[in-house]
Amino acid sequence: MNRGMVDIKKQIKFLMLLLPSLIIGFILNQSSTTQAATDRSADSYYLNDSDTWTHYFYNKRTVKSHNAYIWNLKHTKRQHNLNNYKSTDWYVYSFYNKKKDGHTYKYYKVTNYNRSIVGMVYSKYLTISTTEPITSFADDSNYLNYIKTAQSQKLARGIMKMFPNAPLSLEASKFIASRAANNPADQTTYKEVINFSKVAYQTTVSQWGTTQSKLNKFQSKLNKIGYTQEKINSLHGYKLGLVVYDLSEDSFGGQIVSIHIGLVK
Image 1 (tube, rainbow, N blue to C red):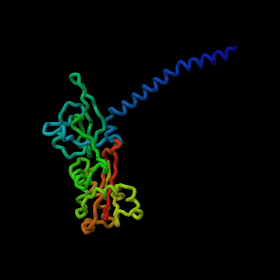
Image 2: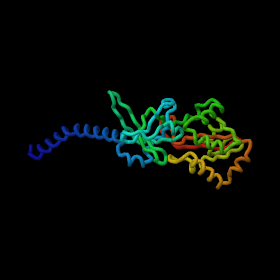
Image 3: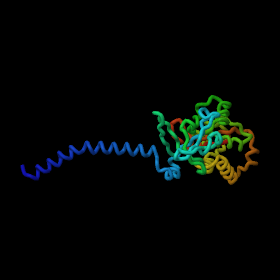
Image 4: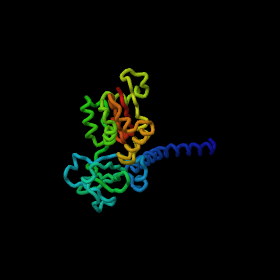
C-alpha cells in the first residue's frame, strides 16, 4: 500500500473521531444561544424592538391592596407602585432572576407604551394579556359581561360605545369573525351585513399606543367612508358583531393582533 493511501485513511479516521465533538459543541452552542435570546441583557436594544415585547396587565388577584413596586433596572430603588397604574398596558421585554435565601424570584423588565416608565416588577404582580375564544361563551349576556370586565377588552369597550344603537350579539360576533362575513352574498343568515373589519384593522390595531388613539383613528377612517358618528347613530335594527385580539394571547398561546367588527340584521 502506498504512503498516500495510508495518509488518506489516517485523515478519515481523525475526522471520524472529531465528528462527535463537533456535534456536541454545536448543540451546546445552540443551547447557549436559546438561553441568551430568552434572558435578554441588551436592554436598550430590546426595549426598542417591538418584536420582543409581550403584553401584560397588573394582576388583580396577587396585587390587591398591598404595595407592588416597580424598581429601577439595577433593583436598588423603588420608582412606582403598580396600584397607581391599574389600567396601564405593560410591555415585558426581558426578565431577571433574583436569588435570595435559597429561593429564586423572577422579575420582569417592563415599560409602558411611551417608555416614560422603565423598570423591574416581580413577575407574579403581572398577568399576560389573553382573549377568550368566541366559542367559549354561552349567550349574549355572558359575552357582554366578558367584554365589559376583561382587561384585554379595553379597545372592544370603546368600540361598543361608538355603536350605541346596535346591541352586542354573540351569534353576530361569531359570524363576523368567520369566513362567511367576507362573502356576505354567499350566506343566508343575515339580510344585511356591514363589515368594518378591514377598516378597523388598518387603523386601530397596533402593538404600541393608547386605546383612545386607536379609537380616534378608527373614527377618522369611518368618517372618510361616510360612516360619521351621526350616520352610525341613525342606524337602527342592527346587531353588533365584535371580536378583538389587541395584542393578546389566543387559545394557541400566541399574542395576536386581530379585530373583527360589523353590523348585521
